[in-house]
Image 1 (tube, rainbow, N blue to C red):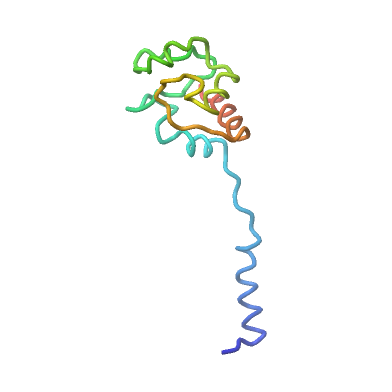
Image 2: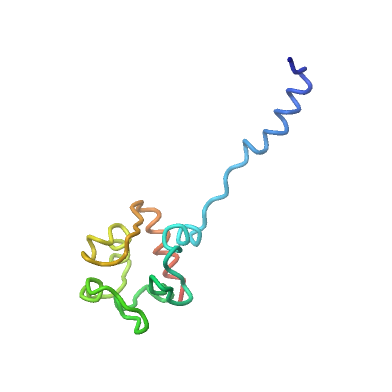
Length: 121
């Protein structure tokens, strides 16, 4: 069966906006939720992970109402940009024996997550 020029052109014109429209860019909050949101929140501890509200600048493993791994408690220091970057890149290298299993290997994604965490106070 052949389509006439008019029908083929009409189908192409109907499909063109969907094909040409760029996908919406993921927000930093979307990236946080994608990489971290299964375990972490920014408004209270979950069963599996501490809240990340106010994490930037906070002492590592310091929330009194969360049971951190011994590895993270022994780490010391504060959640600086460098510490967050290293932890998000490879949590097991940052705190061997720690409980966190996820990571953000892409540097741009890590930076977006860190920038987002700086805003969550």
